[in-house]
Structure formats: C-alpha cells, structure tokens
Image (cartoon, rainbow, N blue to C red; front, side):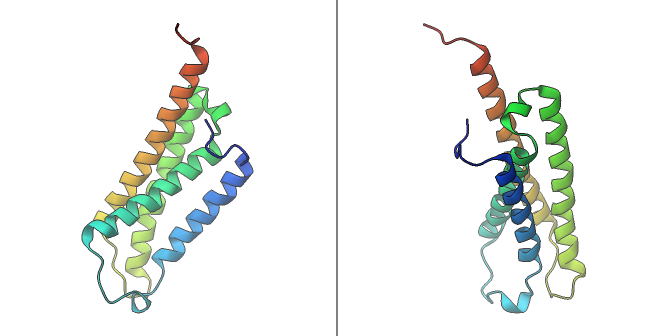
Length: 142
C-alpha cells in the first residue's frame, strides 16, 4: 500500500506537523509582501484544496497507519478526529487572517475549499485502506 515504504509513522508525523505549521505561516504572510497581481479565483481555491488535502492525508497516515486502520472503529475514530481538527484549522486560519494586522481578509469560500481538500484526503485514505484490507482478506480469484 505504501507509496514510500521506507517512511515510518514517525516520519509522517513530522511531515504532518511541518505541513500544518507551513499552512499557518502561509496564511500569516502580510498582504504587502504578496504579489499585487490577484490570482484567478479558481487558482486560489485550488491552492487551498491542495494545502488541506496534504494536511488531511499526512495526518490520516500519521495518526492511523495502515496496520491500525485495518480495524474499522480505529479508522473511523481517527477520520472523525482529523476532520474535526481540520475544520478548526480551516476556520481558524481564515479568522486569523481577518483579525491579524496583516491586511488580509478571511474568506468563507476559502474555508469551503479547505474542507473539500480535507474531505478528499480523508475519504481517499479511508477508501484505500478499505480496499487494501479487502484484498488481503479475500484470496485472488482464478
């Protein structure tokens, strides 16, 4: 299942933490240092989807490795946990942009894009783990 089999759960936890810190830092960059050219709406939202897909995927793998995820209650508990924390980060970063003196505005559509990325990653992880577990349980057909 693992795309990078040499990475351990500890590696994924470190990557997930760094990714999360990177999201927060990116959201706190003052508007004056950003390009004066506004990105297209689609590109901006795509960046949000990708950032939170990375967030969700890394945290799902970090907190619920495939061997633990084979047990469905464990997988669902971590999926809900990652999703709840992801909602907090998605909303929190937008609120932070609104209240911090960095001349940036929070955007509810950014929150929706963040949640879409989070949902894609968490749903994708659950799908892949279920598919892998089923292929191990069932012998190949001849």
